[in-house]
Amino acid sequence: MTRFATSLLLSGFAAAVVLAGAAVAPFSSEGRAAALLGAALSGAAGGLALLLKHRALARPGIGPVLRASGIAFALRFLLAAEGLFIIARSKGGELHFVIAFLAVYALQQIVELHEGVTAT
Image (cartoon, rainbow, N blue to C red; front, side):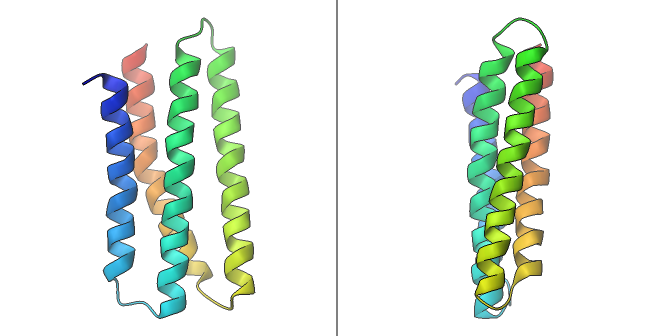
């Protein structure tokens, strides 16, 4: 198994751990739905970010890596904003959404940083 495939698996595992935690946590139905949405959106963004950064690391120079990092950050920002907008309209669970989103993000950052350090 390649290093990148291992990183993708670890990134997916991070999202799965938070999704499982949100599924069994003693939240209200609105809170649980918000946490599940936050973890799912963050997991998807993290997988895409890892792919973008992996492709950027194959190119010479730091420009492609910075560009990929900026795109990944913007994607996460847009997904977080969209998710909060959806949750706010459904009357509740904003804090659950944010905590789940950031929990997955923090775990995936460890994987992304490890991928970037070991690739150079």
